[in-house]
Length: 114
Length: 112
Image (cartoon, rainbow over the protein chains, first blue to last red):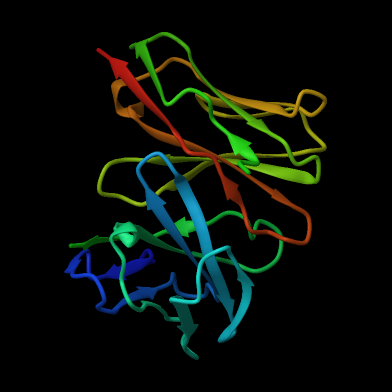
């Protein structure tokens, strides 16, 4: 079974631009979460999607948004990029029910904002 | 407000010895705890978990201990191997939420 796939792996943008990141979950996983990892800050929860609906949201500004498609694939968008948005963005999928906390992560998209 | 704390940013251990990684939490509502391992250029991978109804869970060389009264958990790796060198993240979640809160990670280096 293929793992979680994130594209692109690397991205360089300039301040003020917007960016879209893509995530394909493991087949059969309907829950997709997004996390931001910065040096020394651990993994910060952005949002979770299930059945095309945002089910949970972290404490990030409205510039960060996402969506999920009927095939469970998800995209994350960041508008009006700031230097502080430079980070590794991780997508994770999980099964429903018991063990839902067990996340399967992709390799991430490394975003650099210049 | 950091609800899950890993106070040691790094840990260095000799191959064959025990590695002990520590994690503290502040939210008494957390009832499920997980450890993830992360190699460079890869996403974190699930390692082991424990429910609050237990105080110990083992999986091969990995054992997690939970002390609810102290709001503390630890991951023991015995014996440590060079391939264990990675960043280890502690995570906690509460019933009904399912969204794990992660610590900042501890970088483990196992020397041959």
